[in-house]
Length: 309
Ligand SMILES: NC(=O)c1ccc[n+]([C@@H]2O[C@H](COP(=O)([O-])OP(=O)(O)OC[C@H]3O[C@@H](n4cnc5c(N)ncnc54)[C@H](O)[C@@H]3O)[C@@H](O)[C@H]2O)c1
Image (cartoon, rainbow, N blue to C red; front, side):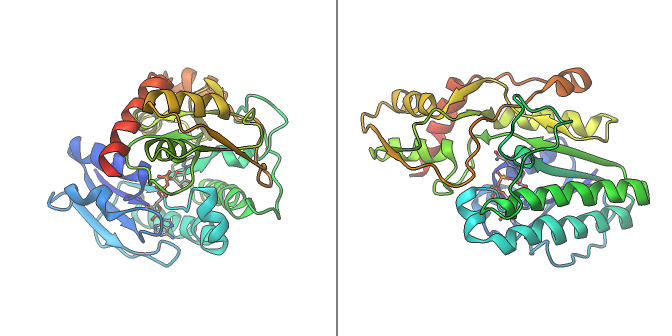
């Protein structure tokens, strides 16, 4: 198959590129490197089945070749970065999604959207099933991301209804692993890098807010299953094992072997207090559930960052 991936040099996208090439597909990666790194896909550049285009997907993108799948993963994804670039974030969710849907329609390809658990906002239902409509502050500092993804979902289903496009939508919950950026401010990479640098781990609030952490290999396995399933509605992909942020900090210190301690800072605006996927649908429809424990996933990710910093 010919698979176009926007955001293909980012953390998740680069794992997908590798996976598809290993399966013998041809991959067209479109990325403007705003948060991703060429280094993530550098070893693929000599592969004849891999093409890399430096391009902002918010601008129209034209391609001659046939395309079987358009996977739209391009988005600024970490709070630190999307708060710094709110307009670019909205543009990749709105214009980028529109452009990718247009390519899929023109090529009669299937369309796959990487949506997010953030569309549930600061939820008042726990865990969050796909039917939950969310509780999002539409004008808060995180709204550029949350609302761009909500609009991306709306656009996707508009194309499904109006043009009969074959669509898949996943709502990704906190995923971590090798190829994350050291300085993107996401909680797992942040904690590991701080511990490796013997710096105190920075916890916001008391650290009693909960998160669930999915290892990248589990997510990639889930994405492949979604592509192979005939199911067009959104599906949560994430690990339902719930940890407090403080537990994550303590486990990271232990696995790194650091004793740099923990520093507490005030909670940022609109920081969700709880986040945990209801993955009943993924289990029933895809026969998928995460296999990698937090401890094992952290060990792999620590090994990756040790080799990088
Ligand atoms: N990692 C997670 O926990 C998580 C959770 C929920 C949703 N997601 C979604 O998954 C996707 C991938 O996230 P990630 O964690 O790999 O982040 P990432 O920042 O590593 O990857 C995103 C990639 O998109 C590229 N990009 C951003 N805007 C672009 C644009 N306008 N044109 C072209 N390229 C652009 C970036 O340079 C980067 O390579 C995103 O859509 C994100 O919202 C990720």
